[in-house]
Amino acid sequence: MQYQRTLGPLQGMAMTVTTFVGTGLMILPAMSVAQAGSFAFYAWLITALAIVPIAFVFAFLGGRFPSAGGASHYIGKVLGKKVERAIGWLFLSILLVGPAVAIKVAAAYLAVLLNLSEQSIFLLSLVTLMGMLLFSIAGMKNSANFQTMVVLCLIATVVALFLLSGTPMSSQIIDQPNSWPELETTLLATGTIFWCFLGIEVMAHMGAEFKNPKRDFPMALLGGIVIVVLLYLATVLMIAEHKVFGDEFTNSQSLALLVGSLLGEQTQRWFAVGAYIIAFSNVGAYILGFARMVQSMAQQQAIPQYFAMLSKHGTPIRAVSFVGGVCLLSLLCIELFGTQMEWLIEMTNGAFLLIYLLTCLTAIKSLNDSLRWIALLASISCLIMALFIGQNMLFASVAFALALVWEHLKSLKQPIAEEKIHVQ
Image (cartoon, rainbow, N blue to C red; front, top):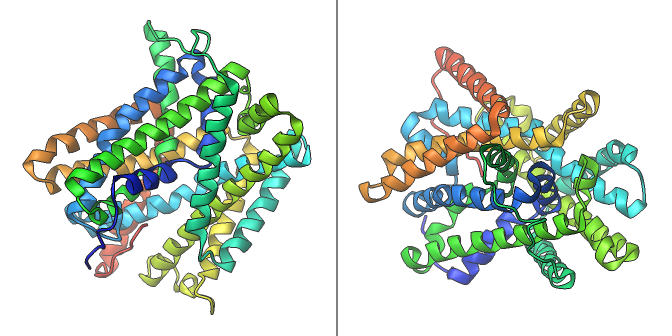
């Protein structure tokens, strides 16, 4: 299949920004300030520097070996089909920890809109999940355009707030870590901040669509990441200056509280409407994406074929129901055990980071000699980030190990089918 080479650097920057800006902007800046205090500014810069080589690895792989399979395909090329299938299971395991975070963020903004307390979050999360499932079942033909529009509105809002706030860059909100304890605090916050850059694997699908990939793609990628980091840094500065951070509930509502501090309670309510729509549409798209993956796995007989059925409108309704059930179980367990959102975010980060690490390691073999040093640097970045995430890497490690054992046991009974599970 030949890609249409239609993208220039500006369109590429826009795609990069809309990939990384979304629900994360509503909670990560406040969480990073709560974790690292005045060192949060440097924590964001360190994370951005760690991300750049990883982004380029996916860019180079996408430009040279375009495939709908993305990360799982690149890993499978080098490590084999069993590992490729195990990566599919690892992606699916993220359902247990990832969507619940965004659902709770959406519920927190709904609580602002309805003027409800923290005790309402669980019930509002259930209501939000049901709405998202209905949204997914109905299908989202124009979801990409809609999401782009709402993300651009969010970006415009952050820029307007920064101009209105006149936030000073004082030592009270920006402080350079000068000792090991201060540096350790800064580095630990990067384990949470990494959530902002999840989705970097979609870069693999962009490279071959540029008019002049060698010239335009690096410009688009670096330019887009710079814009994303500036947006997050601006939000970090405003949140630190106006002190709209603290516990989990406050962090979840931080942008709405910031709007209220600058523009009043009535404007805060209107902003909460927009923030809820953004979070709702983002997670709705993810749920449908996971459902497509479940359907694909059912078609390949990795899970019961019952989940492969499509509705008359082409929606994987049974797969959506399965995904909804897993998300419901996740929310119930989080409520029962009092799991912190910070842990959920870092467990999700750990799963993606393991996928990125395996991709970068296989890229050392897949890319030519002149690019291998970038793959090596990206692998080192992944390993360093894994240290910052710490014990929350256990979730990804256990899930991947169980998937490998499962695929090995299956291969003893029957040969692995030629078809591959594609993860978008």
